[in-house]
Image 1 (cartoon, rainbow, N blue to C red):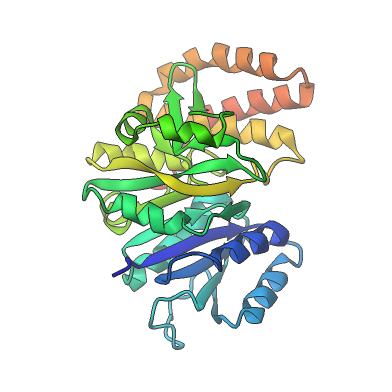
Image 2: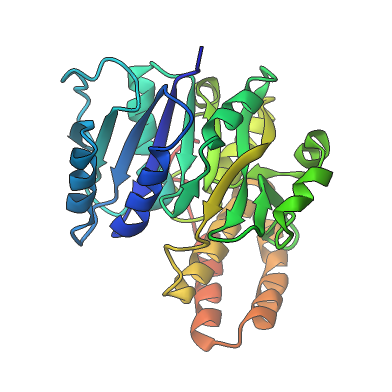
Length: 324
């Protein structure tokens, strides 16, 4: 019998990518799932277009404001013919935006796993089936990732996720740039020992993990949220896994591709927050030199460099907004 899965997707002013992602989910070789789409107060007409899409697919659609908890309305059976839209009051970023959907899932308590999926992804037909199968192999597995490929190519973005180097305040994805045929040479146990985190573009989380460690730390706006969540999970003994036959195509950094300085700002700020939270402020001060050095090597654009410096100091000044 299939395990029950909620698929959580976050939208912000991006109906084109979101609808393409939703369309790929229609072809999943899996039955026991329901989509929860959270909208971060989009300022365009993307939410209306997404609602039209769901109606066109004849989904049983329930639309809620972020604080609503009445889930009756006939949505008693979890299946792919039902969908929920949550309208957030503001653009909360990834972590807080996803948390509204996660709270809804936990309140219903009628699922086994939650699949976090970026809206700028296209999933292979067997992506969810193979993710769940891998997660079920070990009761201690709390987080399971896919093989992410750059959209429209056979080139690997990452196998599962990556490593984080606290001294450099920098994360690095594994197997980036290799052809998908390299998967044949990878051993599950080896890759899982290498990884510090699973990339949030495709992340399957066991329900018991969220009950054990809580939700995303809302101190982060973009990037490093999953790194923080998995760090907390590992401390409680939860393990990570990668389904080497689960393929997801990802349009890399679609949310900030037209505003590169935002990417530099949020990556720097979030990584700095992560280091401060888990390794201490002293290491933050050491981080300044490698952060600036890597930035100079990667870009000579003054706007991007200023964004890095601002992100670093804003990260230094952060105060945790919840207990996660």
